[in-house]
Image 1: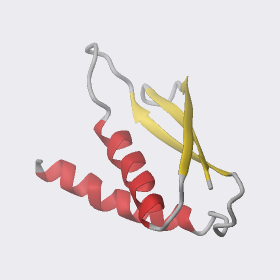
Image 2 (image 1 turned 90 degrees about the horizontal axis):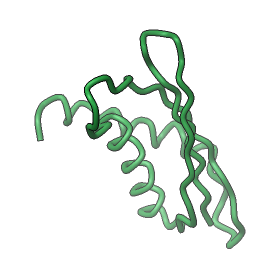
Image 3 (image 1 turned 180 degrees about the vertical axis):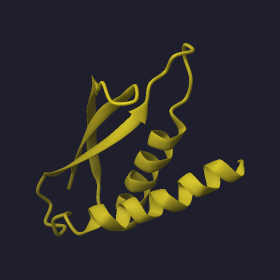
Image 4 (image 1 turned 90 degrees about the vertical axis):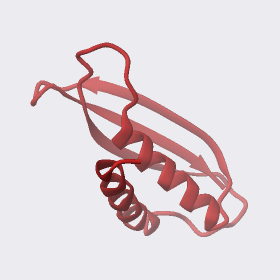
Length: 95
């Protein structure tokens, strides 16, 4: 793992702390949290979106470490005209 990836990983931990305050208490009911992120446009074909991957994986892992059950993850993306970026909306369904 390179230095760039370690910086993304550290920033991902901070993202979970920001999201954590919106999580409902564990009550065996289904709840949702919506996460929005901007991502780079892929211009050279297929590649791993490392920033999104690290951020989402860290959020999911920390939710599980805190005792939440991840029921489903859904996403969609919308192309934006600003700097060839696109918006990824991720819905995490949890209990």
